[in-house]
Length: 483
Image (cartoon, rainbow, N blue to C red; front, side):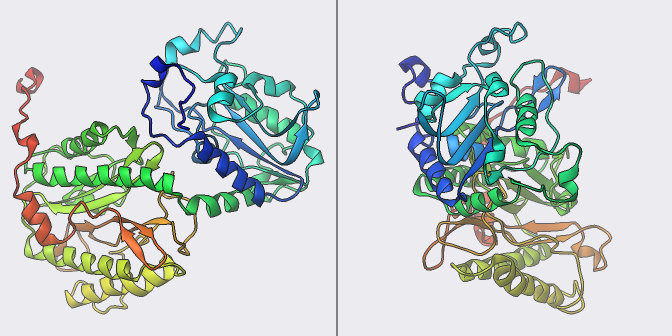
């Protein structure tokens, strides 16, 4: 059953057919319920709506845990999951309940929201299409009778206090306020100082969700593979299209155009496109440099997000199609460290210790010493300042821990960054290289998922010599730029 089964034919045609099905999300809830302690309730909130400016909001992105458990992609909702069956006033039994955006309300401030911001499921659609019953309009949560004190544990994530109070009754601000009152949440910032006393637990739920989300199902892997393939195809096409004189923003745009061409909804994180010394800024997202020079490299760390699941692929290439002697030396050293880590990747190891500290970082430091960039392999330096790996899934830095299990998807991403004015020969200044790939941990090792995009320096140079369909795109000059 796909997510939008049950909609009218006209409405269903507006959506892709390969979303995760309601059975997937129900299975996730059932598994979480087996992990919950006896006589407990788990409470999940939808993500806040983020304001961009004035009356314009950013494109809404659901909280990954809420999406993982429900498939719901709308804001202003709360889900309660009970370990044990509950009984309502009519004698009906249930073990979960949701309060979601109404389709239309009597609230005069609502202004017929579906006309302005699009279709809503409402409680009826939520029940029919996502299978969570009972479900109610969100503003009814205020009067909903629930005694949280009767539970041994109330499991939830702590609040960040960054939710706007809108004029609509039942918004996320209201839902959180009503929950705090019902559950006896302490006023002020008590939770920032010490854990809540009594039955309120803000720690355990993240552990349970990490156990579950860290290991991907076959349905999740299908979406991840698609996100990764799209991202790699974009890297390939950019390698063919890039020319000296382009801007960082233009190069970013080619990547993201290809994402949209393959129906990826958005990027999994802010795109990083850093030419020359900008590549030395690990999370450089300005991408403002108007002209990239022919004697620079460009570091491109981008990932398509497809139906909630994100890729994370980085390639570093010479803008003029040929690595200089120094660029190739640094690039090949990073590649050597990555290859060694990939070959050692297998279940049971800890990527922070076994792959990063003992393999990749050792190879990088030995290579830097051989190149006389540092004096000795054990010389303190900041040329490789980040970790080697992280989980990948609904978040670009997904839940799941560093000890590998079959079914995990991780990155392997060594890097070397030599900013201007570093304590080494000036010929190395401004060189920044990161190679990042996505891998599936298998029973006996790992599978490289992002192999569509070449990694070897020789293969990159060969690909960059090929023609690109973007070569034939010529846009008119802006009159304003001619003045």
